[in-house]
Image (cartoon, rainbow, N blue to C red; front, top):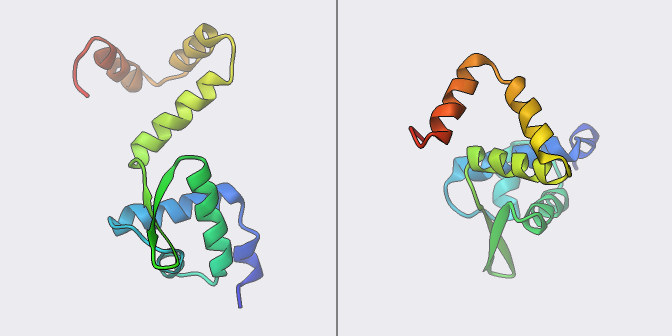
Length: 123
């Protein structure tokens, strides 16, 4: 039986843990495989629901495996973070102000790195 504390984890935390298992696996996993990788007492239905939500968000892909699905991450962790940043930027109608404030809040090293990227330098 699932530990009630695990079942009440915030969705973002659980989704992050599931993504961590998928990235570490390097191969498609079924909900049972993800459940094992989490090493917690989460119910398989909770893991399946989380994977379904991640699929609906476009964060994981799935392919038929037997009667169910095996799931794979669509992007690596940095790619997913960049995707989230784009999503947040798209929510605001004043993109110029958002970008200006974002850059103003960068530490000097990150700002220099961003400048090099924008100038076509290192990736």
